Length: 395
Image 1 (tube, rainbow, N blue to C red):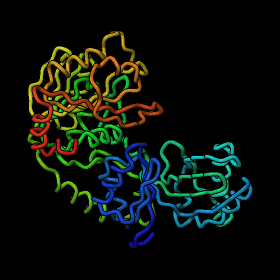
Image 2 (image 1 turned 180 degrees about the horizontal axis):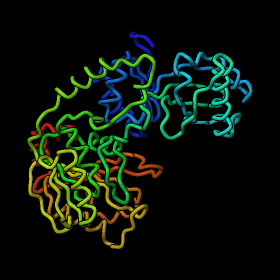
Image 3 (image 1 turned 45 degrees about the horizontal axis):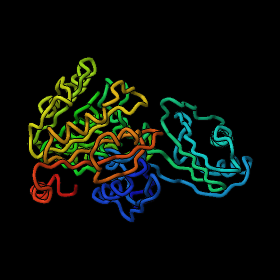
């Protein structure tokens, strides 16, 4: 790859495609085209480094190197073997293949992966009498194999580990939310770091940390140690260093409060360790607090949370969702609140009509991301007051 623009394929979660497109355009992407759970765009090698380092909503960033049609595994093998793989890998490096297969022809993803791996290894052996190694855990070069019926796309995975692995969390709760999904939820809710934020059931603190990162404009991968593109033949270490420095110069101070409540003292102690390790204890405040016994302390306030919904965490209290509604109605006036759940029957007990419903996926779980508006006095008057605050204008 040269310095001129090339095509990139960026993956994300369902429901975040438009937000990702806006983010990529702001970062300098050209010809941005949203797809299902992904987008296509164009940029140069510096742009590739930048979006890996700064994008909050990308899961992985792929650079397609060859597209073709194939109707059999033997034909797949022959066409893969013709690719000049020594432009991308050398025999001293290791590689791994990440397959995604939707095909009536290639019905077994592992067999297609094996044929692709053999073709790459045989290319090197025939030319150099030596093969690069295969390392599925921590390869130097990661290759994405995408099969859609007879359409084959081979890409270099520039990210390596998925980009939701920010590198900032050593301690996890029982049912932590994915970091990319958490950032998407915050951005849907209009969080820009202005005003105050509360996660009333914060668990291990993912929403809190992502909220603090947005508020301070911290690069999403500030704490990440490595990317796959750093093993590429054309890697420009000086350029990447310059890009990181430019993003770090854009860090800003946060003036509002970022608060987290949870009843579980043990998980809060782990959350505290995560926050202290990142030097964010001056930004994020956590309390051992029962949300149902709390009252609104700050204005303006945005609430976003991921309550239990009888999947990975069991709900023992039958009135749990009813209490959420009562707390919002009686203790949090003039507040916009968002929660994500897969238990739509339980949300009927909240007793409030959601003003917005957005379908998202938490892992494989189909969920609804719901907005609730609670007002004190005239709704029209109070909503007008809300819109004076930039952080709430898009709600």
